[in-house]
Image 1 (cartoon, rainbow over the protein chains, first blue to last red):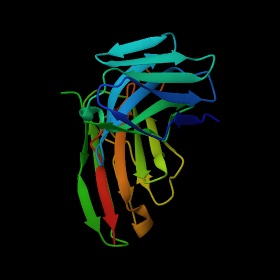
Image 2: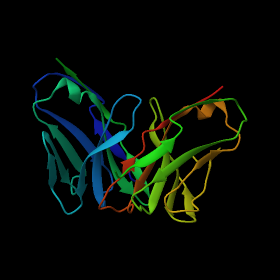
Image 3: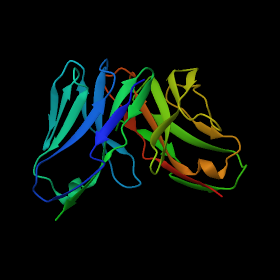
Image 4: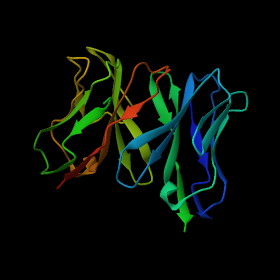
Length: 110
Length: 114
């Protein structure tokens, strides 16, 4: 059974800092991995989608990497800004379902 | 604009009064799913649908029904809502569960059952 874990659960950093969010999964036979952002009480916004054949994806200040063999993905945020404050979730397909991690709550201090 | 549309955004209802939350997507996606999100419990899948007339239970299906008569619509039905169904609900769709497009989420429906 696929399980997804995100570490840390919460993170507080000063503005401008580079940071890494971690996502680990137990079954490496995944088709893709998706990172989302969620603002409080709002819906999930897709940030990056990495296919199983890819090693990383980049969008602006965000870079996501995927290492299937070790069951890990990282989301790197460069030069963090207060507007980056949100919860970040990763998700992988598990059979006919999609399994989400519990998320990392990020707070960027101005 | 490609999107998943849920209605209503907010709903307060009383115990036992049947309600339907609608979900519609305009991307011709085959796969659709409903989730509920509760503090400390994360996102939990309620039901999913692989295609028209094909639905299956997720992890927390009790107290819910769904139907998929058309590809674009996937309503969530609560026949007799109870206070423990107070939650934030999300509908999501994907071209296929196996990608390459990933998930698109609706904006959510905040349901309160009193």
